[in-house]
Length: 128
Image (cartoon, rainbow, N blue to C red; front, side, top):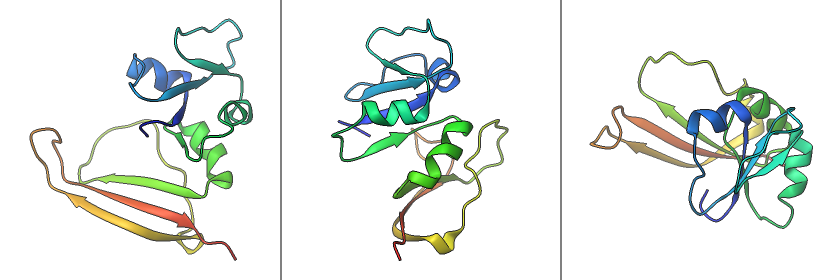
């Protein structure tokens, strides 16, 4: 995500609580008076995407409604699967693997920075 725009919903922003260095943050919210110093504010995913024109790769990092809206217009998915049973309230929407091909798979063991084993798979949309 370094050097690119990251799009997130307001709840995701509030859970992170800070700007991520080296990225342009776009927060999507319906609250018209919402303001965050150093971030761009958009009222919809479409408005957020238009703010990112000229960037060769844009990252949608949550929440769930943005994942659902972004999936149909995405060409690439970076999917992290964590080897643990954890409680959560936001999930990747279902998608058909027949529409995507894995172009990269990296498995990572737990270490001092990551409590659990995880796998990062990059999928590119199959263009027919």
